[in-house]
Image (cartoon, rainbow, N blue to C red; front, side):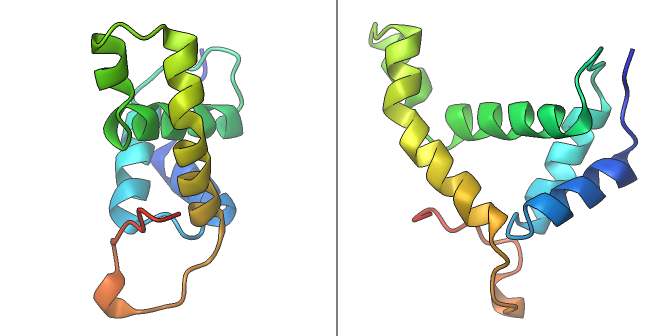
Length: 107
C-alpha cells in the first residue's frame, strides 16, 4: 500500500510543474493523498491524476464517448490538448499576482 503525504505531493508538483496553478496543486495533492497507489511511484501517481483530470474536465472527451466514439479514438483526439496543458504547467510562468491561479487554456 502506497499513500503519499500531501506536502510531498505538493513539493513534487511544484518542482516538476512550476506553472501549475496553486488551486490545481492543492486539488491534485488532495486527490493523490486520498488514494492507495499500491506500487506506483509518486511521479506516476501525479501523471495519472493530472492526465485524468485534464482529459475529463478540460476537453470534450466525455462528450465524444457519449456520442459513441471508441475510448482509444477519443483519447487520441483529446491527447494533444492534454499534452499542451501539461507542457504549459512544466514551464515557470512569469510572476503576476493578478494571474495567480489562472489556467492558460491556450497551452
